[in-house]
Length: 396
Image (cartoon, rainbow, N blue to C red; front, side, top):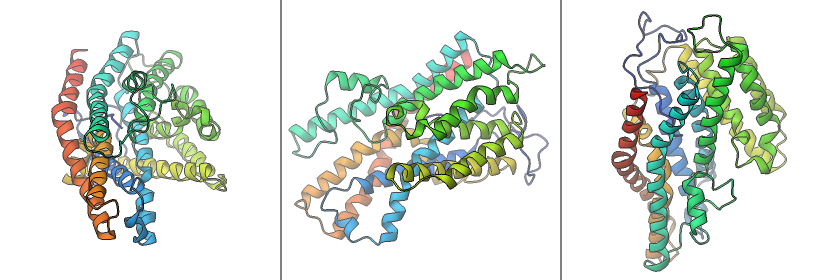
């Protein structure tokens, strides 16, 4: 998602050997940048683009018809990218709050910085979807990327992250997660503050609550999400539906930070494993959740192992992945209308009946086009917004 890992040069790893295998302590031993988490974010963003390109291929599906079954399985498997981002978001927000003393003013500042960080690029992406919709319907005679009219109420609901709450059809694949993300930020800061007030540490200078206090505040709701809420259609627009995956990421940081004992973390992981083992896969909904939970669990364990082995700043520190991570939020927002334009125009040029080779070339070309659009949105909108949010944090 949109939460960013730390890039604060003050966080170094004094006294830790490069080959040591130990968890970072609170405020010490923290890598200057979580390159491994960045790399996972880059992989997740690219996988979401690939999935949407493959999933939304227009009929008669020539690429799908001539693809080997293993290719189809592989590309459909990339749909788990969102779950990777949910775990990462939980991990990063837990890290961000580790030194935060909760006050009403600090809570407002935290949410304001999140809005400044997210909203400008999000609104530009919405505006681009509206522009593409108008051009497709009125100028280019192409199918619109949007089902139904773009009414004022529908647009306003999207701009305020309330599209799912008010049951408006999405205007772009993936945008629904921003609604969930904003709800999670509110839950995270309020839950942190509640645990801080009710379960403080004996050392009053330490902002971290006691371990069982954090679990008392967050774990019951996370477990309810895992065992009950995720199976209900009516919770789909709310963070309660996905809270378990955010919680996996949060508990991973708290364990690496030594706020939680490893035994508690092992219990959390065991719950996820038991749910996987006992899940009924006879219907599509449960089978899909089982896959999502497996992806979230794998992501959680990968981050934990990298942290325990002091490799959060080393593993996946590959320039292409780090680049994808840097533009991941913009790429996530803008790729769907770009892909729609490229693929719809390509199909039209082929008289709506491209050959298998033509279809594959059109689908592949949508990837670099999406990357270019993501780079432009990041450079001219997202990056300035992130700098503005950082300035707000320094001022606070």
